[in-house]
Image (tube, rainbow, N blue to C red; front, top):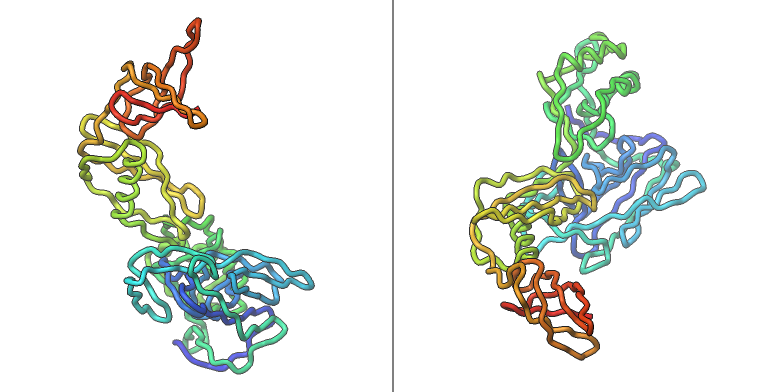
Length: 389
């Protein structure tokens, strides 16, 4: 049952309200997807910086034990106070959408169809952050209406605890207390933390835990039916916050890699089906692993990076032709040698085939007696290359 009440927040609770003044949206992870908002009431939830409506702030910020205040700068810098010591723990980023993007409402948040650009507050057109209504651990909130997920009970006051079919975690370990929806009685929470199910899955992956395994763990930590009644599905899927990289984005990245590495394509078509990829949340970048020509096929393998860390790779197979090869291995070529505004044309021999715009190695005979030298040359056209000294 969900009720509205006036609550006195316990010591150690952190609360501060922030809003975006200008362009951009704050980012949060909620039930496996990224959601957005112009405002947030930041609180400490299980050691994570979260919004009071339930979503976890992205990127993830873990608050150390004993932190009694949080400050957010105009530029998104997060600072915490622990005792007499103050330190920065990271910086928020804002989601920037194109003017044509229409965000839809999902509960207390907004959702989008496309991936935004990420910018720091106050940079490249992004708005600044404004902070207000800061509450520290020594300043309890006493009269603010909040929403509480207080658990229902049986006739003899035994709490009924519900575990959903899907649980999204941002912690490194899976413990039973994180599986339960809503508030857990204090006399059970510490024992449920001891029910450890191992390392949490990484973004884009999930693990399944059976009801029988959960029930066994309950007995192992000393929780009996008289202590609480658990509503558990047959299988609980546990996953980390993730984002979907759609097939169109993957294909575009592969096509760009082909164009950059192998010259301008004449006409390429995708062979087979390219599946979308579930990746951890964060800034996605692509880098070229390899471009391989096999008959009339081109195999483009691109690496996927999230926040600078390599996550996986995807291969896209194209059919079609690339720009024609204008120099073959062993061909005699005209080599224009350039240095300090002076150019000299000599004859050399190509050691590799290539297209216009590609770089190949050429051998040149210079001097008396002749000395063979090798140079990296840029292909300018059929039988013609350029070497800059």
